[in-house]
Structures are given as structure tokens and as C-alpha cells.
Image (cartoon, rainbow, N blue to C red):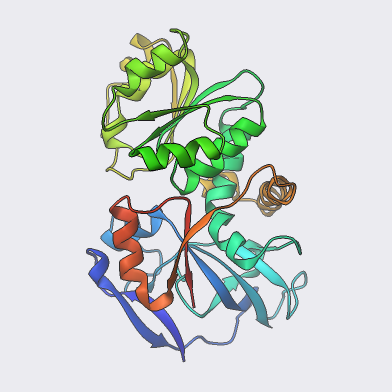
Length: 325
């Protein structure tokens, strides 16, 4: 029996139950890993409340990201062995001391990437990789707006966009978060609770506006984000921390300047094994070089998952948060 955090019914953080479960031997194409760190992400709350349906039914072990050591290998697995250090992003099963994993979704960790770093960046860091390199190609001279720039994705995206030569504007909720964002690549910060972020973007860019807006907030930043984008620019919605963006009249994209709007997900961009390897390799390279640091600013014991979710949803966290089994 191993410790895990399960959801038996949808609801608030109180539905996360700490209990012992049995993990069977790995089946065809699976590995069993002993987890050293489990990532905490906003998507975990979407599964908890039922916004995203559980692919395994009820009850389910929460969590979608982690890092650990392979302790058992199932039939048909050839490229992983006992003792390998791996990180992963897989729907559900993450908040546990041990877990089974499809071997094809596990990525070997380089020696210079720690388990805690990996658990804090596999989902967020690989998300940033495709957002900045494939969804919209950020480069020298690009002007980007990143909402929630002091959050888990935000701090990584700000550093990486800066590294690629962009001018980085970030919205944040407090002066402390503004300082943190500036230390992590933001050239300009906007206190969205106190300032009109559209007016500030126009001021900062001298009316040129942004090439791309990266939005993990959702409901409360839309459609105002569209007014921050230059003609033929991109609105990239990758999360819904404040609630989902409702259906809207697509003609608004024409009236705002022939804009592009997209809602990408890592599941699509990393669906093929070769893409998963390429995305993670690029992430490991940029983190290994020191150009992007992974700030794991909150650590919780596995049994304290409820508090972790309360802190996350209460906007009381910065950077990455992890559970330690």
C-alpha cells in the first residue's frame, strides 16, 4: 500500500482525500516509478471540480505531473530500465508515492535536472516551450503580454521570452509579484487590480500594441486582451484560472484587426513521442544553460494537498508548487 490523494466526488479542496492505495505490477508498456516530487498545476483543480472529466472515472488519484525513479518495468518496455530518473505529464495519478506510467510518456531526466525541478516544470515548462516556439514564434523584437506573469507558467514564460529577445510585459496582482516578475524577465509590469491593463499596454508600446498575448486567466481578461494586440496578432488562451471564456461572436476578431485566436494544449503538441522528446529536450537545454530558472517556491507534504489547492486558487502562490511524498 502506498500513500495517495484521491477524489471520490467533485468539489472544493476538501474533496482531496489522503489515503493508502494498492499499486499493481506494471502491465504491457508500463513502468512503475517511486515518486520524488509531484507537480501541482491549475489543471488539477479543473479535474477536481469536474470542469474536465476524469478519463478513468471515479475515484481517481489527482495530479498530472511528477518525477521519480523507475522501480519496475513491464513487458514490452525497451528504452527504460530500473533506476532511470524520469519526468512526465500524464492525465491523473500524480499525487501518489508510487504510480504506474505509460513508458512512452516518460522522459529521461538529464543529470543536471533535479526531481523537484522536473516536477515543477514538466507541464509548465513544456507548455512554455510550444507556446513561444510553435504556437507563436517569439524572437528578437517581439512584444509579448503575459497575464499572471508571477505564476507557474508566467515566470518561466517571462524568462524564456526575454531570452529569445522579446520585450516582455506582464500583468500581476501585487507589488511583491511585480518585483518577482521583473527579476524573472519582465521589462514592464502592470498591476491589473489597480490599473487598466489595456491603457498601460498602449502607453508602454507607444500605441504599437503586442504581437501576442499569452493568457492563462480566461474569463476576467477577455475580451480586453484583444485590445492589446496589433492587427493580425495572436491571442493565445492556454488556461482558465478565473473561469472559461464563453462562446463569442468570431466577427470580433475581424473588428479588432484580423486577429488570430487559439486554445492550444500540450496534449496535442506532444501527442507524438518524437515531439514529446523534442519539446522536453529543448526545455532541459534552456534550463540546464541557466537561461531559464525553475523557481519551486512552495513545497507541501503529500497529505497537505488540500492546503496546496487552497493556496493555488487563492492566488497565494508564485512560481511552481510541488508535493513531496
